[in-house]
Image 1 (cartoon, helix red, strand yellow):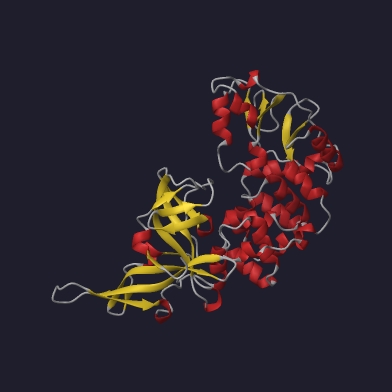
Image 2: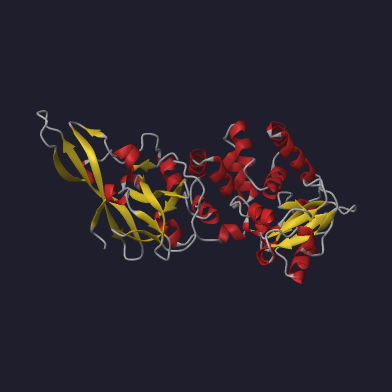
Length: 413
């Protein structure tokens, strides 16, 4: 289909189809980013309405786009609400009805392009209309986008904000690989262009020394906003590497509850389970039901390794909790009736103390085939948990992130 034109007004009425062809929503808008260094702009993705939400669908997740609809490659759909970001243009909001001299943009034609390895969508033509002053029907003409060089340039889009938009839907580890290829001044510019959550995801994929270099030019309010989006264990690692005065300023500026959590984590010696654990886990009481547990872990904000199990304790339900009772795994929740209380399906698994060494944590996870292991104090209170991904991060050879290379598929966008 490369070379064929499909018009935005047609696209913005098409159904969004799942991998099986069933309609799950409707396309509302098209997200475009400016071209790199004056190159051709590209379609980053689509805004769709699904389950009463406006969501973002990355163009790379679309298998086919034709008169039947936009069909997804897989069954996976990100239902997080769409939020436009700097460097992005929405066709319906920013392009259609824009005045170009005496003419008005009435439509944008897209075409599928390819370099022999990958394909993408890009704007190719613009339909301009001129309304006759005597009330006659408007006159339209179709022009190439090269004749309108500023149309697809966002007013607030610096080179780095456009780059941040291009990296929008890439995995954070792939974004980190791209960032490592940039000079330090461009890394900082990119950090300034990213939103807090995305920048936090990026920092978690970089060594602590590189994290510090990226955030050193940000004001304290922005630094705190970004750090509060990070996972507790990753944030603790970063705070350990900060100079003492900077660490104190950050902790004083943080939310009081988060700061208390971080001070407890920083009290553990480096190389121990306590320094590796996260208190941000799924915790419920024994009288909570299977239905309540499933509703809790369904939240997309939970990491996969965290949402794989529910830790059951006596009150209070925030670490340090009441007495630890056991764990219920996701698969067990799927097998039991929704009304069953967790206390009736809880499993006893070994826990660890915060003082044991990291290599012992790895041995415990491997011995019992665990995705995570609970960390309890001497009184049997749950302090947090350690997940297998964090253990892998510590046990892999030093510098493994720097040696990782981004794939061509990851950078194509």
